[in-house]
Length: 118
Image (cartoon, rainbow, N blue to C red; front, side):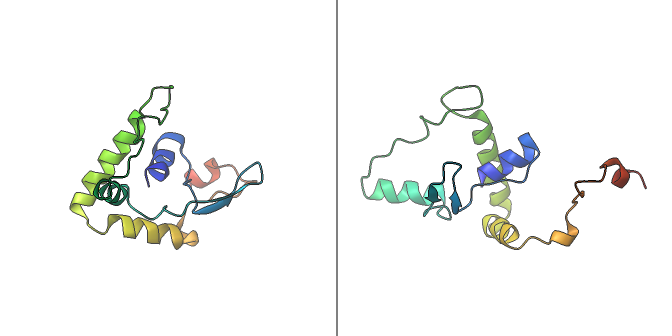
């Protein structure tokens, strides 16, 4: 979920990581734990004494070891979830059932400014 919000807020794109996709090199990538919450994985590994590498090896925007942006988004989402316990199921449902007709889509041959000024 963090990737989706990072894309929306920092690159202006609607992108996330699909549960199954074909990589540029042709490799089929399957992410079997995509719908399992990070906190649930942490609880499971702690309960079963499974060692993990944690986030310390995630490279951030400028090469630092921990991504400030990802942590910022995690904090934002945690705050939203504290007010709405159905936040993540709602977002998942929205991504699986987009209302295409209500989204602002500019045809490729048109200038965006044609739509901004009536």
